[in-house]
Image 1 (cartoon, rainbow, N blue to C red):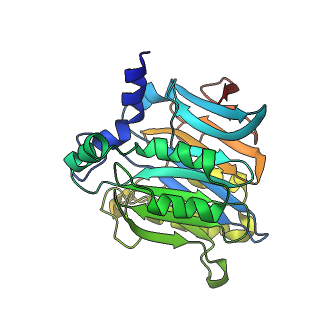
Image 2: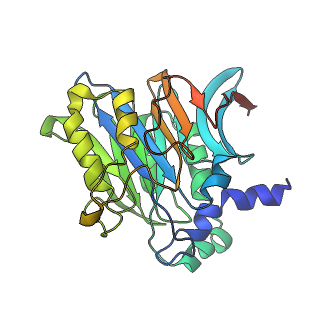
Length: 293
């Protein structure tokens, strides 16, 4: 690929994320939850148009510096930027689409103001940010080319947050507060303070599953099962978290690389078998690509 083609590929999100975007099907899920033992678990479903095409080029990449893995990301094809990543021992981050603002405002931010794309900002964070709190501050303040939700998990009790962003300002930072019963934070594609439109309510099925699991039952396996939920109430406007545009699912802990699981979900719905912890299942093959910075 030409360098210009890689640049454009890394900006696809910024070119289409707006209130009246031309791409219609978007439905990501991000969850950070804390177990009764204080362990932090992070999970995501990445859903998007061109599902089969994206699934065929989904890769897990270890980014190394001086011979040691610094962070791991899930990316597409040769793209050097991404929206699912973990800096081991520090924090994990996933990003969901937020359809706010005018698409021409995104173009202005990119071309005139020279802002980096959202996925590039995520790579910047996992390369340079050294703590969970600093990561939350980074995503709350860094200038963006498009509105976004950033779901951030740490390694210590209480380290979990959803950062809701416009291009130039933070809208909200919603944090874990287990001491008052908020042991998980959940983001789909709507502000957590707002109602969800009928027909795309993935929030209530996920809340039911999380509440039924509880912090005592939380593990990587149980979070995977929650992300794999397909039993919902369509008549009440609900939609399956695992649906026909889910490209892949990931469950991980920044504190423990052994728990990292990513699996392409196309052709595996419903009732997908739970993958073995620590395995990277991508269309039946294991991927271990190393990119040295």
